Amino acid sequence: MFQRRKQFLLFFIFFCIAFSAWAETSTDAPRYPQRPASSNIYDDNHLLNASEIRLFNNLADELYQKTGIELTCVLLDNIGHANQFEKGDSYAQNTANKWLLGAQTEEGIMIFVVQKQRWKNIVVTPALEKIYSEATLAKIQQKTLIPAFRENNYGEGVLSLSFALAQRGAKAKGKKLDIDPAPYMLSENSVPALMILFVLFVFFLLLMAKFSGGRGNGILWFLFGGAIKNKNKDAETGFGGGFGGTPNGFGGGFGNGLGRGFSNGIGGGTSFGSRPRRFGNKDDLW
Image (cartoon, rainbow, N blue to C red; front, side, top):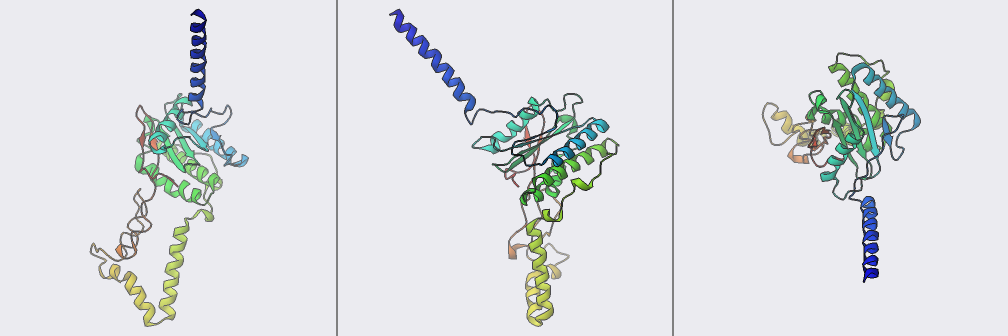
């Protein structure tokens, strides 16, 4: 009898050890990246080269020395969650907690990107929420990270976003960063492809109007006549809202005639606190 109990006890201990090991390797068990000892950026897939990492660290050091704002970045391959929109916020929040973001001055920013899920987020400490509001973060990402990432220019996206965030923080503190902005700017290749297609489309229509006589003018009137005729009214057709400046995207597009095109831009970010809060909608992808 004693021998059987001993065997059962050994089996139970073995089962507990095996279950603990499985839980640690399960995709549902969060595993947070370790903060590098000599860098402000963690790059899982080496999306940034050595020069770009150096530029990011130089900017982060300058921002911290001038303002006390801590700037960090986490670039991961996969957070391992089936439903990243519910768990991604908590994962970014917990990573910031593990990194002790803003521990010295209570002011910190973390750029958070997961490549496999094409998901992004920005974590800010409570002390910075007035400087980096929901609308502000959404607008900054639309002008920097989003167009660059859509062209697979990851280094440009991270650097341009980080520089915009640093500039805003320095301005709010009444400081000026001693940093050359040129290496942090987007290249012409990062202009959104849809924008280029739109410009080419308009140019093609103008050529048709010039060389096709009445037929070309008729096409232009069909597409844009409603906007011209109802420029002082809230027409349901015509050119619509155009490229609006709201954080939610490009605006109404061409109107009902051509669908709402160019709409539903992408927000991003989250607040730092006991309950993480997302900035933007759940289609927070690039």
